[in-house]
Length: 304
Image 1 (cartoon, one colour):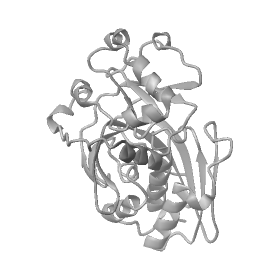
Image 2 (image 1 turned 180 degrees about the vertical axis):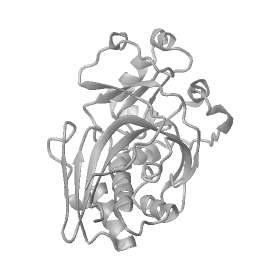
Image 3 (image 1 turned 60 degrees about the vertical axis):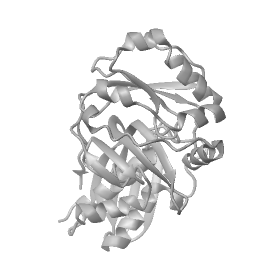
Image 4 (image 1 turned 45 degrees about the vertical axis):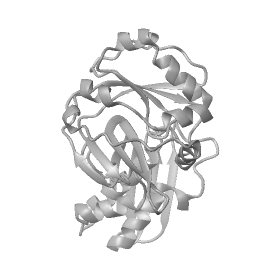
């Protein structure tokens, strides 16, 4: 009997650097980024059914007003796109335990979508090849292709669909400072366009990406200025976390930057042992999550 259910720990991501390049004729910006998976993950369960389609979300980071219509949920859209491309399954049920903060620049929705694609492909008696799977992922958003792949670290450019896998960096302790405010990615791009700031320039520092010291030297996020202006708490967080005394305490391999379009500020120590949380300033309305970067991608587990 073929398996009908699969579970995936859908790992969140950090952008260890993010450059927003020129806007093309379609109105979309090219990007250049270094994606890194972290241990923090949603739990995604996918069941193949003979009929019917549904998705349910629950967990500690579910917004009070929910996530809106299921037809707009990225996990739902991923399952529908996979079924249309492959003819499998006839029906599905997706259950998501939300452990990744929503609207925080950590790729939670994209991680869920990537997990659904990987789970359905593992359940499919005639699975799609990697190129076809990534083609579906690319139609869903810039973060989804990386979060569908089985690489913990990758350099990405274009719209996020062009990638070069890199050897995983050693596990590093990470604190995620998550403000109560969320940031809509489309809004962040609009703010960037309205600011009149010149597009970022390409980095592609392959030779520097083999160590945390090298990554720290190029850690930059082109969204930080405009998001910090429009959401002042994020600007204040960045300024306080970049206090020279704290940076000296963290060491030269550390990075402090916003992930994606925000709102999360990631403090990456560059070493496996974290500092005690007392070393961090305290902030009202900010949740601190301790996690670490990942050296592997969690596998799909067939359960039934």
